[in-house]
Image (cartoon, rainbow, N blue to C red; front, side, top):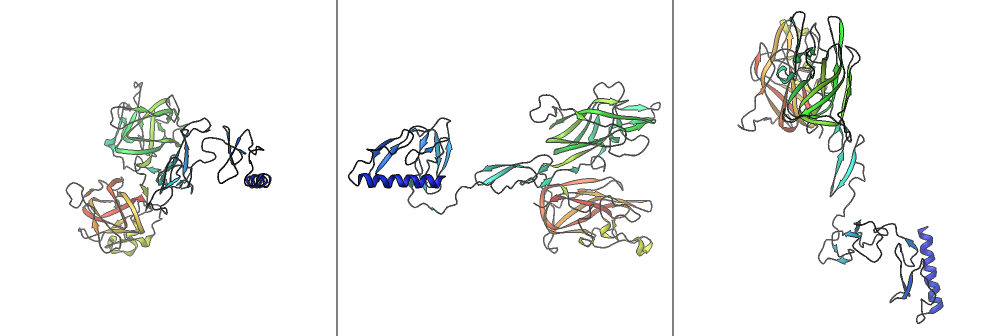
Amino acid sequence: MEEKARVLVLLQLFAVFLLFGVNGDPCEVNMCSNGGTCVPGTGTPFICICPDGFSGDTCNETETGSCNPNPCQNDGVCEATGHSRRGDVFNEYVCKCQPGYEGVHCQTSIQGANLNAKKDVNDCAGQPCENGGVCRDLDGDFKCHCPSPFVGKHCQLRCISLLGMEGGGISESQISASSVRYSLLGLQRWGPELARLHKKGLVNAWSAAAHDKNPWIQINMQRKMRLTGIVTQGASRMGSAEFIKAFKVASSLDGKTYTMYRTEGQRKDHVFVGNVDNDSTKTNLFDPPIIAQYIRIVPIVCRKACTLRMELVGCELNGCSEPMGMKSRLVLDRQITASSSFRTWGLEAFTWHPHFARLDKQGKTNAWTASTNNRSEWLQVDLLSPKKITGIITQGAKDFGSVQFIVSFKVAHSDDGKSWTVVKDETSKTDKIFPGNSDNNVHKKNIFEPAFYSRYVRILPWEWHEHITLRMELLGCDE
């Protein structure tokens, strides 16, 4: 259509030349459409002065706003500043000029300017946001608004790590509650430290006291975390199913001021649907995620009693805390090496190989154990390419009833497997000694602040109980 209109205008101009020649009056017949006023031009036969709402050589184009058609020259970007038609008033829009040009309409070339400079582009044009993220174009950059539980520059990371209730990475001292139920003549204590998902035993959950009219259980994450969900579970007491049917969630940055969770645009506190029996699990996601140090679960409706086992889901604030593949076996056996391996009773069948050092591995020989107890021993993981490493989870094991674990350790990293850098304490600038485990099974999580980028990671045992023994998982991402 635009091409046809252009051809029509040219034919009209040609007709004007034929009718009036060089000295004739080109406006004797008004060639301007839509009420435009024709005036003789200089260099061109005539000029049309168009009424509001129309433009073009013969007022044949309809304006749909102050920037359409674009009044800016030399690829200038027009931004409307008002909602009325432009007409002859130039304060309804602003021209943003490309490098090398200036003026109201970017009509003036700047002397000495580099006209080959990079022009402003829409950084969202390539759709850089993954997993449903919404892109916002910035000056030379972009920002992705990610739906929960995704995070990262491109929404490429899944913030869904289990944060340590079930595995024990969250210690007993981090869990508190408004009250505790005592049963069986006070012999059974259903304390908050028992509120761990899938916990076994006769007394295996937290339960609020019968007189507690406003019960709650709280976890102190010890630092600000990104929380994207919660998994809940009830329990059975004296053969009777007890669980939380509905609950609210509150959060705090300081442990003093709490905010009840609400979804975007919601005026009332959000009520989460809980469990329907004592054993199955129920997962609820937080969208948007919660950024907090303290997370508090507030039961609203309970069956028999407010009884709970649970796990929190989320990640570090930067989102880069995904398991790197030790437990899932994405890290292959050949990528895990060690200084030595112990053999129980000297038998090959009972060798505690380095590739056994996988978090939560089961079996009779289910961890790496060094052949000697000295500080020259090490376990190494080759991630095949440099990765961002943000933390580590460690665990001990049992050797035929003997509890063994690493009490403290150092961490070294390398890009080539030859030159090694030991992680330093930010304050003392000396080698940092990380606290390890206190038993054979509970997870111990340590965060590397700041994180480091490397292909190879080594664990250097510093102190141990009985024997140097380790199961582990590295945390990080591909950024």
